[in-house]
Image 1 (tube, one colour):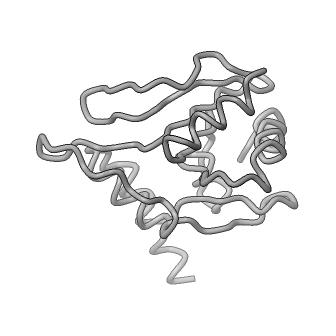
Image 2: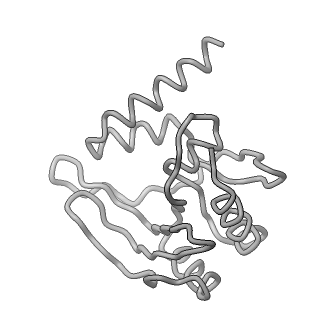
Length: 158
């Protein structure tokens, strides 16, 4: 369940990004929660492409904690920035790439994996949970991938 501050931050993000020509999508625990999984998100994660990351940086400039810059760690690289809205950390990642078997994946076009979820009168873009499960497995985060798969299985058997 999202906290009031997270709901408020989500409304702010939506108001800035809705109706813009930006490809953006909620991902991670906030996305999973608004899709029905029983989690307690700590932040809001947004995926986009490189251009979208820098445009979001400009739109949310009053909330910047760390501006969007290219960054790489062991298994992930992207154009990443951090923001804070109502005390909620927002992470924006553009053109994210995952390293699998010591090879960087190609940049993924997110559009085929985007679904729309209505949450508190907002039509929010989220990543398809099957795609999310696969992405978590590639990063070696099997426990979260299993949680997603179990949730999807339980929805099919309801």
